[in-house]
Image (cartoon, rainbow, N blue to C red; front, side):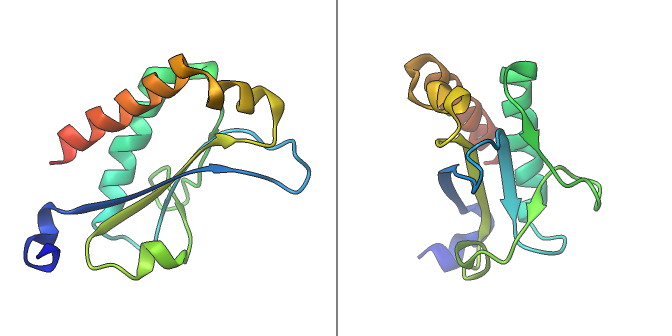
Length: 122
């Protein structure tokens, strides 16, 4: 059924990140390599999260191709026929980020930014 309506379908994969040194921080939007239908969606989500949090959090970006998403060959991004975006909401192994991850206020604001994005996209 989704294949028939893929232009209105969206795959979001939500995560929190970790790093080898346990000192990385920030929010990241990932899409698959190249310019795809996922790139403008990633931009909308990035912009809404940044509007909500401003300088309260760090942002991990790659602007080499003109947008803020990082591009990776993650299986979940490449093995779908619909737009797909993977979000990394801060780093759970870095204490200042972990405190935000478990804070209901921060999580509510993050969810609201994503919900606002979905409404804009659809």
